[in-house]
Image 1 (cartoon, rainbow, N blue to C red):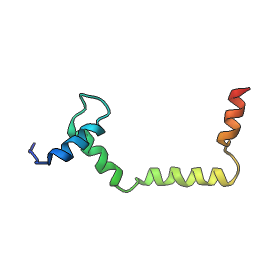
Image 2 (cartoon, helix red, strand yellow):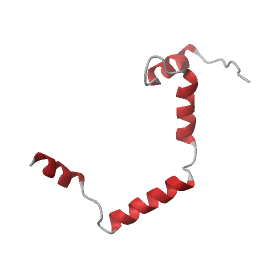
Image 3 (cartoon, rainbow, N blue to C red):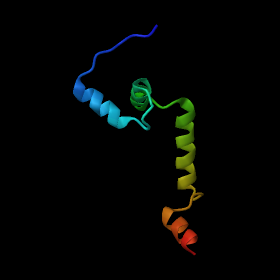
Image 4 (cartoon, rainbow, N blue to C red):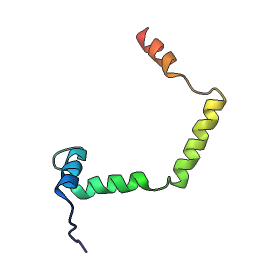
Length: 72
């Protein structure tokens, strides 16, 4: 069931600025905000842990090294 919500003109203007493109719905903008506030999924937590492990083990390349490699 769809419903209507009331927001102030100020909030509407802020939501409009947050749109990624002109035709994006306000519902999508609000969902993006809600998802940002939700806890990470278990898969995301595992990915973060794996990335941290790889960093500690030196299996990553620094941004500076990548820049130098690309500049060469």
